[in-house]
Length: 109
Length: 116
Image (tube, rainbow over all chains, first blue to last red; front, side, top):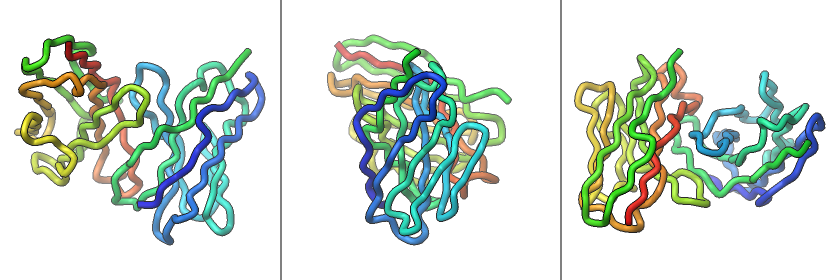
């Protein structure tokens, strides 16, 4: 499975968009990009995933570059409850979820 | 729908003692996972069940860890004997065969184990 690189931490102002980058330069053609987040003292929570096309759901948007070597998770209007560790994972649809250290996002008032 | 249930939430034991964790997945979910999360790290898969059969236990330290899912529903993870380095949060997750191709897993809140 391809590895990912994420910033260690990010701050975001409440009400503003949070843009979380992820590099995955060794991604293969059939590997998906998954995003999960983990709020303190809770288990990870699925956010969104995509293969090639940009995706949007009620939680976030996922923008994948045309060469698929990087992606950005967008939280359109960050709230204090979005403070969490965000994990970008690249794997096949049948593959394991291999979590890295993720990005600690802190949303401030 | 009810989420993944885990118990206990917290457990403190001394090294060389044994401990067991319980997980009840979401109803109808055939696939069940156990993860270990050490402080400051992401979760690491220990074992994956499909119904009551083991799909992947390559990362399970089998000399001390064991897991079972006898009736294909709830599952138990056991550590015997515990070591200091087993201090971690143990997470259980499940997903439906209908959605497994999307690799969307639902996690419980975990059991925080402290080994003294």
